[in-house]
Amino acid sequence: MSLELPGWSHAYSGKVRDLYIEAGVPALDRAERVLMVASDRVSAFDHVLSPGIPGKGELLTTLSLWWFDQLTGVPNHLIADHELRGDTVQGLIPDAVAGRAMLARTLDMFPVECVVRGYLTGSGWLEYQESQTVCGIALPAGLRDGDRLPQPIYTPAWKAPMGEHDENISFDRTVELVGAEIATALRALSLDIFSRASAIAEARGVILADTKFEFGANREDGVITLADEVLTSDSSRYWDAHAYASGNRTESFDKQIVRNWLSANWSKTGTPPELPPEIVERTAARYRELIERLTGR
Image (tube, rainbow, N blue to C red; front, side, top):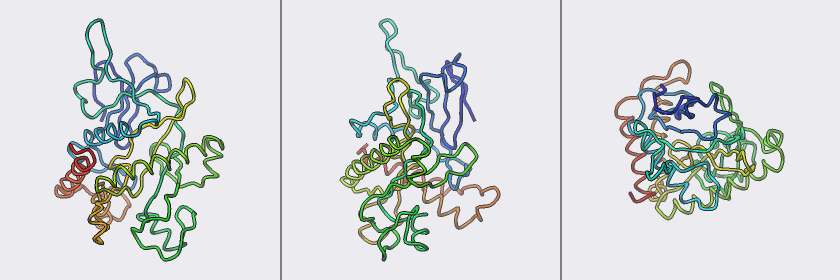
C-alpha cells in the first residue's frame, strides 16, 4: 500500500520496496531521483506473505547503507538526502519513512540479477544432485549440501516483470540482453564485490553463502552503478561461521526460517498461509542479530 508523502508521488511497488518520484514529474523514466522505501513486507517463492516482519524495512535500509559505505570505489546510486536551502540544511526524506528510505539517482537498469554463489545450497544443491551442475556450470563430484565451492560462481538470472518469475539464464544469454562488454563487466564486478563482502563478513564471524546484485547505467556518463538493496538479509544468504564449523549448516541470518516453514506447511500452489507469530518474531530477531554482528551496533 502506497503512502501519502509530501512532495512525492507513488510510482511503483515491488514485492518489498515502493518507489516515489517528486511531485509533478510525469513518470519514473523522466525522474532524476527516486525515493526508495523499504516496507515490512516479506516475500518467498515469488509471493508476498502476511503478516510482514515488524521493523524489517528499517533493518534492510540500515544494512544496505552500511554495505554501500564498506564498498569504497564501487559507484552506487545513493545521492545526498539533504540540501542547503538558504542558510538551512533541509532533509529530503519525509518523516513518515525516515530510517527506511534511501534517496537515489535514477538509472537505466539492466534486466539481469547478478547472482554469485560461494557455497552449494538451496536450489543449487537440488540441481547438483541431479546433474553435478549449478545453473549449467559443472562442479566437482562429491560435494555435500552447504559445502564451500572451489571458487565463487556467477549464475545470472533474467529479471522478470512484476508478476512473473525470475529465470536463471546463461552468461551467453546475458550477452544477448546487454551486450558482451556490459555482460563481462557485470560478471567481474559481481565476483569482485562478493569477494570483498565475504572477507568483511568472515572477519565478523559470518559466512556470505550467496547473494544477488542489481546494476544500472548512470544516465549522464554510462558508468555501471550498483543499485537497489545490497547484501541484505533479503538478497543474501548468511550463515553463522561458528555454527557452520560445528556442523550446523542451518543457522542462517535471513528469511530461511520463513522459507522452511512455508515448505513444511504449503504446497506452493494457491494462496500461501499466514505466518505464525513465532515465525515472524524469530525472523525479525535473526535480521537484528545480523546487523549487530556485521556493524557492531
